[in-house]
Image (cartoon, rainbow, N blue to C red; front, side, top):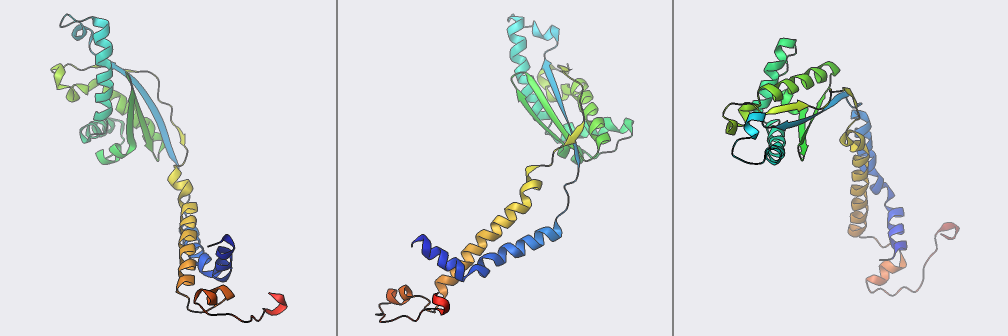
Length: 228
């Protein structure tokens, strides 16, 4: 089918192509709400064996310390995602007067690591909660990490905070930015399918080519008014 034929179809069924997009856009604008402001902080840590443990076994202390540091960073990044860590942070917040359930703490945290550096990302709807949560995360990582490493026999690993957490207003996520445009595009796509489906099911003959496709010999054609 030539591009000109597609244009003819869309000109004839333009209302079917636009109807879903208009409906979706109307619903989207009627239900649209501004993204809730969120505050975020990034924490970075290094971790390693206690000095005494690094010399055990006859290995080169420097090599053994660097190698174990990578394992600790990976292990701590996984520990941050667990309910055990969230419960520990939730309990650590209570003396500060901040009451956050473990489920809320778990939803506010994400983590990553590269080589020997652990990064933790905190995001909540409150600037005060984000700051309190960042400090509680630091305290739990530094004082209660022995629970995550039974290999150390109850001796906690050394966790060093590399910078002070800075709480800042976070940019809205891509979901909040693109939700409405994606809905409109989906409506347009559904409209195009509706228009071409209506053309396919339409039993009427509109053009000379429609008749010729059925094997009908056309001997004449009455032009539209004004020559169209």
